[in-house]
Image (cartoon, rainbow over all chains, first blue to last red; front, top):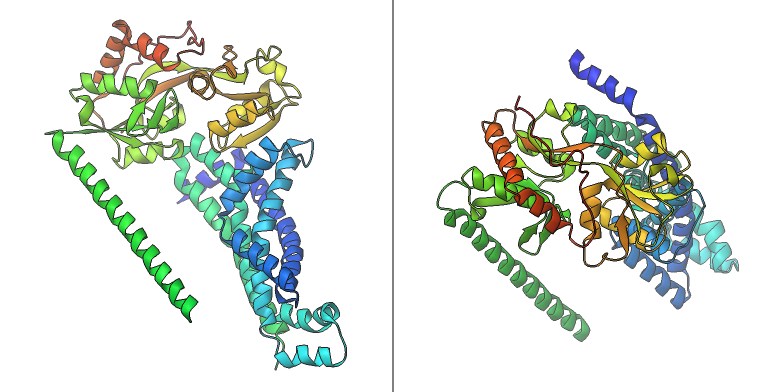
Length: 229
Length: 285
């Protein structure tokens, strides 16, 4: 057992394990913020009374949700960067980090949109009718009446999306982010294959440690903030 | 209601077609497997190679080509296995030790560098080739002649390899690194002009340069700055190591080794590091 623990010590001494997890957390943080914004806009489009916006929102969700994330990430590298030569920054690390955040954002916005829409469904129809009755147009009605209640009802599915986002942030390797966990794991296996079980456990436990608090927090919040009806 | 029926009918038709396609594939696959199992008439040998490295180990339809494949075929022949008794298995870098330990393969020829860490897990015969880290640049590039000139340039390598990091640490601190899952994507970025160089072992680069799609667009710099001893990966408890070394020595002596190197890097002007090649196989542990 002590022998096994010393393998972990060796890994942590030779590789920047915490730094790699930190990159994943940063990716998740930025992508979560941007996908929440984009997802809310998409949800608004899908519940809006304008048919063309509804159509555009639905098309976005169905296309992006059904495209594998790896493909979106590889597209960021091969099409956007290599062929279109679009640059987000002169520094490579920043450049690919931003591409990865964009890739994660456009993909997860589709899921955020659907989570919020499921929250909208928890708001009784009478609320929307009452908003119309006092003369509120669509956007103020959505901002003041529908969305605040919808978000409170959507916390659990949004939490699920956040957990998926955190784990999917390892796919950033496909967009050339080379300091995150999946790349580090490959590097470790390539040069320290004798420690393979310790390597596996390091990353498995690492992600469990990150994911469990998110799960606990969203469960707590969804109970606490639920609209009692 | 009518559209719904039409939709259901289309779905049913599609499902039937998909199922039919699956069924066909399975039957074909099964047939092939029994074919290769029975016609060997005796033992077969499972050899792990790369499937995605042109010039070394490459799956081209149902054919396998490359230097690793040629050496493996020669060695297997000396061990008493004819070409149709060889069962090729894909051995990605990260899985090589596990595949040997669990007996999924009998030996591995897959740009497998002999290192002390790996020797704790598996045994090695050979080396059968000594590669060195080198650079691949655009054909008309004249200012990059070695790793020192990469200061301020853009460099591509594959995810999980340390070769690019080594350049950053030891030769050119100001180099910008990008890592891709495969070398082919690096070459795409190189021909598109987004990176200035691709780095890994010289013979891998030569294999990439020899691909028809890349010929005349890229070249190997030819200034290797490390030593990678490609060995034959074997399980710890093997009894073949000596025989494999003898076979490799024979291959070098009778000229087939030289021929295999030339034919797999044709048209690139690549020659292996002459001071170190052809190598002399180490004694078996």
